Length: 276
Image 1 (spheres, rainbow, N blue to C red):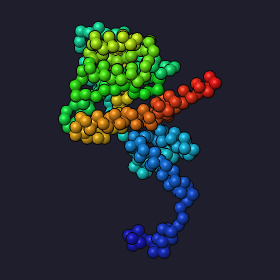
Image 2: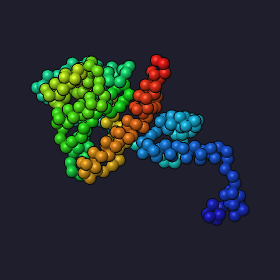
Image 3: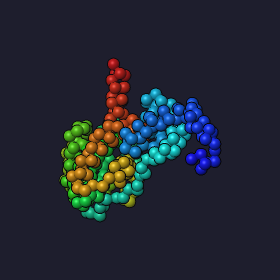
Image 4: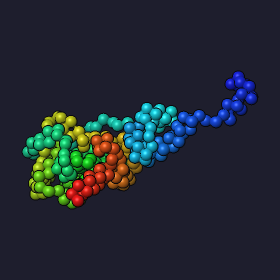
């Protein structure tokens, strides 16, 4: 090796045995924490989320330093893919007005929900996921999985959300104009539970941007990094992702880098202290 590098043997051993600089030692220690957070996120967190997680642990480091260490050590987060619409808006059902109108602001949970359907490829064919998100804390409050994209799939997701959340009357539920959401049975289910229906303007994908963002995150974090042999395998992994990762642990920049459940608990405790 000394001949290859064109250095003397004594110079090589002097370089090898030289102690690490203080900054290099600190980089190595920081990298251990970065790698731990990166692995816990299943390789989905970028430098911004990792910085917030480090801050919560009391570890201070600049974004540039974290980004450099991640780049030097091959820690690259998965990229989001573009979302494709799945529902069919060509039908004769009545279309609800756009009550949401791109106003995604809310002051409390169960004021505004959004819903949509996406598809997942498996060795047995397509698997469809209907999901409902609460805009307050980005929590997925209802979901259903099935081999067919039917109105019953969306009804099952809605029934789960209503059962779990028990929303008061006046909640807005927003979706696209797909027949699954415009169907009379679906409209009746909303009406009977005091929920006001809202639908996107025709051809405007930004009207339901929050729901589409969740699906893009799901596909980035899980779907595009797995190969599902069966629908059942996909169901198990998707449900596990929603329950044990997305709702419970995955940080959101819009929630001050808390997870949906962390955000909900934080504000519940804050309100309790203010009321005491």
